[in-house]
Length: 100
Image 1: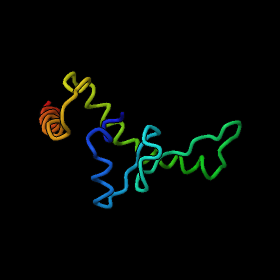
Image 2 (image 1 turned 90 degrees about the vertical axis):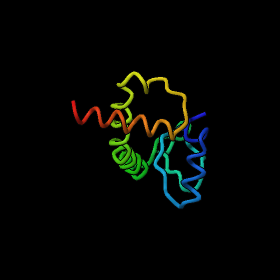
Image 3 (image 1 turned 90 degrees about the horizontal axis):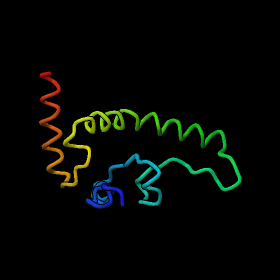
């Protein structure tokens, strides 16, 4: 199960009315969760669907790069703790990165 579902992040964001851009693992997660369109079986996406998928990927790219950067630190590679603790750890790592 994806971490956002495990920690109820999706449900909290929906309650707050915040839209979520997510990858294909979150398909069907709710009205406010936007994921890429899947290619239909034995078919192709329309040009509009391909354009929307590219725009979604471009919007998610900075967050994906940020997560990749954090995962380059050993402490984040296999972390299985609460999002609150992860936020504290991320803040500490970012502080160390800035003073590098």
